[in-house]
Image (cartoon, rainbow, N blue to C red; front, side, top):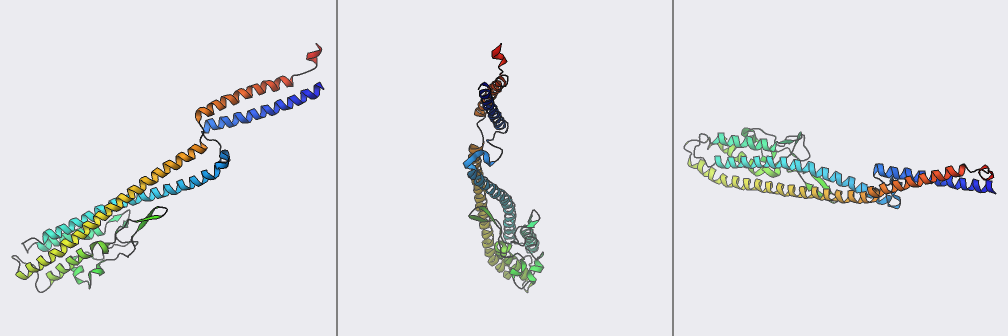
Length: 304
């Protein structure tokens, strides 16, 4: 009976020792990694919540990255639109000049500034070409070319698809403008001026003829309207910038929430983990001593 009882006690002590070793190993892992487990099995029934949250976090990070890229593009686009507006202002100023001998020089400078603004590139792509971002939106480079075209629309090579970006699961924002939408009225003024200069009432002279002055006064109203339209587009670009910034912040807030929720589920309390480790170490020491004592039990100890 003594042998049977000793064997059973030894087996029980051995099982306790193995469980203590396993508990110590788990406590050590939690303390070193800060996680409740090496994989989703470590969080039990909340594994599905973790998986869904990680997927949502990855999507949010992608939306934020898209917003960042779009914000940079809109910043560059704002600079180009401001340059275009400045060119319209230069044209307006030139048309108020009374010196006909130099008016076309000033108008030409304003035209080149407008074309360069519309042909602005961002990261190697033309910003105002729609989705044809490998093609210059302006097909002409001189007032003479513009005057020779059948219609002002022939000066533009952009398509009609404005670039958009998805900044949320259900929200898309237009982040691109089309050259033809932004500058048709301005280019129409340049075209009429170039045609007048090359026509029977041109070139402009100093002092200007009555016909030339009448033309300039009439065209000046069109230029003012064209510049106002460009300024309006600059304002709309600013609205899009604000929307993108808001979306970016919203995604950051969402990521903070999801990260915190995931952490609450899978991260351990380090103070609790340290206590758990120390307790497991103590239990292992006791189990080891108990097992050692039982394995040394012999009838000789009682026969002496």
